[in-house]
Picture 1: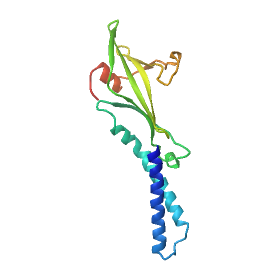
Picture 2 (picture 1 turned 90 degrees about the horizontal axis):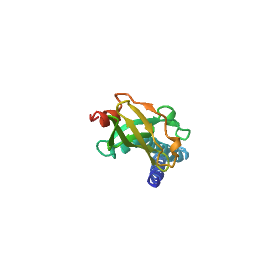
Picture 3 (picture 1 turned 45 degrees about the horizontal axis):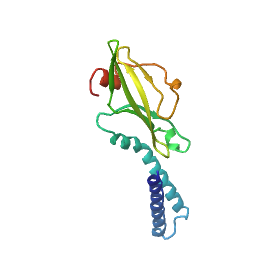
Picture 4 (picture 1 turned 120 degrees about the horizontal axis):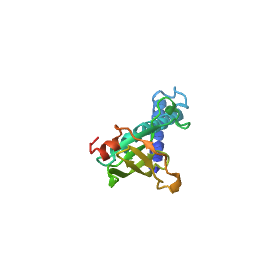
Length: 174
């Protein structure tokens, strides 16, 4: 967070200095307001660049064998460019570590889904899930954020093409 803020200020300063240089090279023919306009455009440009490259950067830091399960894209009032083309605000990842057990001739798989959330603090939540391989049903248990067990997610039917089902139940690599 602090490095992102420092980057915004440095880019704004450099873009403002470029506007000042253009004004001086034109022998003050350009108006004075070119300097803050250049600084503001530089800051917004950096924020848009960071917004659209955050997902690829975070994905490159994931360990080998991790599978991106879902991407969330939502527009934000404070990022006006996101109304034209929303960037990835958060995404879910399964790291490929599964705990398997047998129950009534069916394989039960327990695993963690990590949800990366891009906000000013860039946080991550862990969501434990259980997958019944025979019936292809998945349920999200109480997460690490302190939800009660009664607030576990609903039973969800999993498709055969689901990457976690393919990897954990069928042994295929994505």
